[in-house]
Image (tube, rainbow, N blue to C red; front, side, top):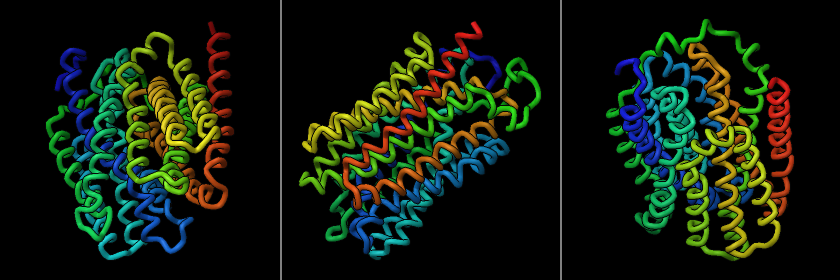
Length: 398
């Protein structure tokens, strides 16, 4: 691939990356739907039901830095392929654990799925690298829009594969997940990733991280990503358990998760354009407000529609905060600093997500659905204050 940026040509590569993202995220939405329920079947203690999902995020956290540095050395294509190979093996291991009735082997398989997801998380940055900097928010949005497929495929597969190996429930979901990852690998190998960065985009030698992290824009970008993703994980992880506890059915939970995933990714068709028109900070700000709306609706009742409205608002709020944070982050580093800054950001994001997932099951089991939502307030206030702070700094700078 040449070093010349051409949006009309580069867009096709972005669409291919979005296709890979769609397949990987279909596996992730399937995980959202069935992992906590599978954990509840395998675990001796109900409070440990969300532990496998939490370990998925631990796997993401542990692998984000090595994954970024590894891809910096061997390239995106090989890096994504290695991650998907790990994902295929881990999905099959999780299925085997369900057949064996082994909770801890299931946890190990979930950890490996997290490693795969840590590699896949860089698909959004790979798309941004293909296009000119003016089109980076749009490229990131396109890739995240690939998750719209996941909103349908993941819950549908969860429902259809639930009884593939009856009387063993949910093992079929993880077998189908392995198939999704195989398809994703074929798409990855059809993408022409950018191998070199144009000299005009280098912007000088790499600075130490200690200097980069002091930038107000970096702090705000990280808080948008960590708080937005952490809150989404906390509430989403507990949702299937809470719905079943409230007397709703598994199909109801799959329906709500499906619409939640739609809320996460449908806005991606226009989030990039909204950022270009209104500014990235305004979009992040709206995302924090939508998370507040989720909290209010969830606390208002436990009917199906309360869960539905709350989870849709949660999904859109996540979209604005995560895409906004990712776009803002690309303004904070030079190309020579790319790998280490992206690695640090995603380490912090998925470390927060892991902590939220660990907390989710315990809060739901011991304190109930209301407290799952009440704890959302503090992180959203932190993100909100950070955005207002950066807005004021930029206004003062003219």
